[in-house]
Length: 96
Image (tube, rainbow, N blue to C red; front, side, top):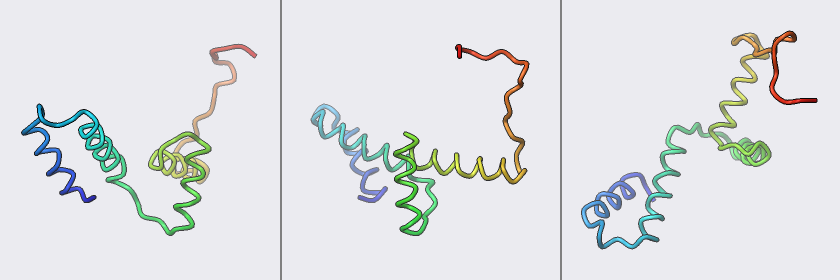
């Protein structure tokens, strides 16, 4: 389903909200959420997409959050960003 199709469905549902069943509305809202979540995605080769899916599952993050994590980690390791280090003398929560 394309973005235009989803937008049209949502507009029609909004115009006749009393006639739309709850399950249909849930489906439309979930599709819209997926489209929004993936709307700023970068397209990778199939092997990279598969690796991202597996890593996202392991990390319990979305695809986009995983990409952000990888890029931040790479930028910190290559000194493009400052590394977030813990202060040895600072307070920490929890116990060991």
